[in-house]
Amino acid sequence: AQSVAQPEDQVNVAEGNPLTVKCTYSVSGNPYLFWYVQYPNRGLQFLLKYITGDNLVKGSYGFEAEFNKSQTSFHLKKPSALVSDSALYFCAVSPRDTGGFKTIFGAGTRLFVKA
Amino acid sequence: KAGVTQTPRYLIKTRGQQVTLSCSPISGHRSVSWYQQTPGQGLQFLFEYFSETQRNKGNFPGRFSGRQFSNSRSEMNVSTLELGDSALYLCASSLLAGAPNEQFFGPGTRLTVL
Image 1 (cartoon, each protein chain N blue to C red):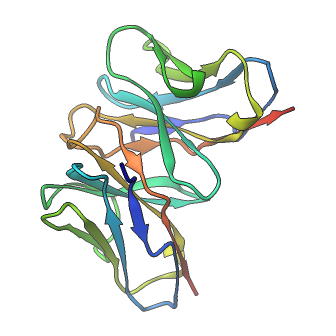
Image 2 (cartoon, one colour):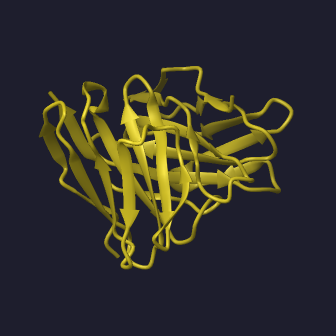
């Protein structure tokens, strides 16, 4: 079965420190990869996506993600965390062959940045 | 440009009733997808509509249905509500159908089934 794993329910980091939110996937082919963020009482917001090419993808709010094909991972990173980055982060995968979205989301990782 | 709007924001229903949720996509967007978000199951894909046609469907029972109108607005209907249908229902719109187009999500409709 196709799946997306976010192994950490919560990540705690001090403001100013680098952060990493992990994501691995088990999806056939070469899927499209996404990261979304959800703030309280709001819908998901798109952060970045990987389609092809450079393994390091840059996105909104200073976030970037590194695609590793051999490890089927797509970890989200930021060099210096802000308190305002505290939110729920979702990794998502869309198979290329469905002709539509049929996006598979991870369970989410709650990021807590302490001042 | 206005974002994705969903109405109502909150709903309380009882078992056995039916409910209709509405989603208005961003102007110009023709693809609308629906997701169910629960603490236990996370985000699960329900279905996607593009130009009034259902393009993809997730693994939900037939009690869950949807439609899209010519102005791209979409409705989702759940009949014979069960306690397990309590969830946040998110609508997402996209300019075109399918990945890799990014989706823009609405704030959701929180449905509580008593």
